[in-house]
Image: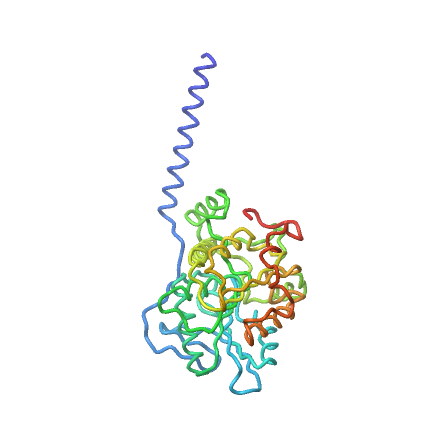
Length: 354
């Protein structure tokens, strides 16, 4: 057999093998699907009582609150935690804001912390609907008091989606700390492909972030405490990552609908949410008019801004912005923020796809 014949046969064999592999992948993909734990049918009236948020479909979500001595408080804030985290993320900020006469509430979102369905993705609509209901319950508890929504990472994405709906929760302003807007349009093709294959072939497989060499915060003691906390998810189902990616897609898409006063916080050393999607989100925001979105960029800030070593600086900025959103922040992080965001990262290792 001459070389040409061998090459032709080899080419046919290679194509045949590729076809068999593709068929196997498609067959397996048809047999597997991501698991979503959606809400059930309404069976009772939503209720906020006894440190718990009782949802319409009968779930009981733990709630933490930090109340000032002053009653009524100057403002009320609802805080939404990030992916794999839970309501305890706001313990230190909530205690600080209470000294500034701001009451804070945080609940474990479905699938996280001590909420039912630990580790299972509940779906975008469920997360958004819970926020709308919880905001209504908090308003009923504090009638006439200004209400603010704060979301960290995934929590910020949930707020962006919920406030874009026609039945958006009534809020006097929103605060987004490193909002999760890393949509697929900014991901390399190989990451999108790997996620698609993983969620269709082994949706229940669990992965960890070990080996990625990513620093979420400079507060090492806090990170060690999270590692010891059984309510913090350490190994994540692939279909939960897929659900989070869908949420980030939606949040980035809806960023143009962000309305009213908004404070957006970002750290220049953030290695979780890359700069590119953050900049795309900022470009899509409505024109910055009086009372519109304001960006604050912190030179030494990481992804977990509210718990970094410099976190108290952000807490002061948040309290100041709630009191008077028209004036500059005490830290000055809002001055020239877009220009500083465009500067090269101050630390190497930013995630691929930036």
